Length: 203
Image (cartoon, rainbow, N blue to C red; front, side, top):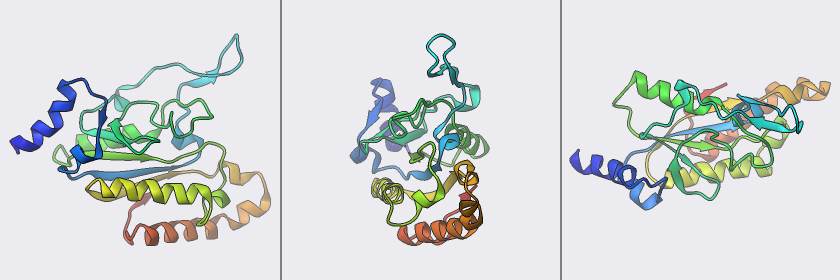
């Protein structure tokens, strides 16, 4: 136990924001995948600047979303770093990101179960995407699988995926009618490709 705590505390005491996958391999990561569109990527606190007229994040981080030494995220370049809002800043990089549900969820889990262990968030959400773009074979799907598999190789196990998406599929009637079937196929394909048939998915 002392060895494990030293591995956790050393990078924090050294004020390091990045933890190599090699250093984190000794821990058992509880992997939570974050996928979907803008609401998952995080738009909380984002509004058009009154003068410039461009989306700007106000920088306010509510208590539920504060950094936690037990929560990490897989960055865009596949490195484990301390999780801080906005979680998706380097993933949904063409948009202005703010607060999303990922950090609040992870903090809530840890508050309910202090012995849960390290949380590894895997952000994958991209704003403005529809469900057809998340189907197997598409870029977003393949990136999600690639990032999730990379997280697993760092040690640990899949615990859940948070899926927050759907608004873009309300524009065209065909997308509305096909949504249920596409969603089931997406979930089934993902569980199969991650070899996690019982992966809990929170929608």
